[in-house]
Image (cartoon, rainbow, N blue to C red; front, side, top):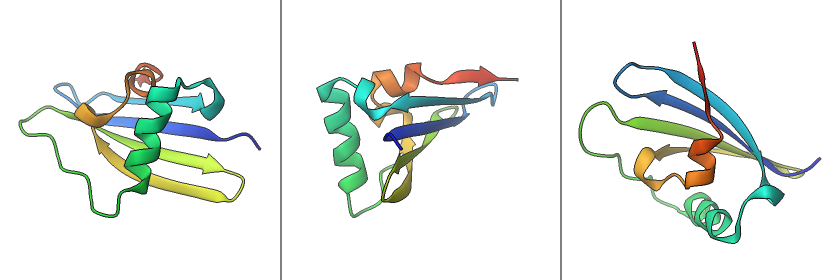
Length: 88
């Protein structure tokens, strides 16, 4: 089983939901390092200030199991956010 990240987006002005998947091997080094840092944190991530912000639920699936993290939109790497497609 290849490592991958499953992304679900919720919130925003219209409340549109979105979903996407990214293979870990397809990420550039900077985005992968950002995700590694986010998943290594011991304390909860801060929420973005203001209304109508997106929240991303990112699940990291790998052979040894999976881990899920709630990430505010300002901390999500660009390639992860771009992988999400709107769901109507």
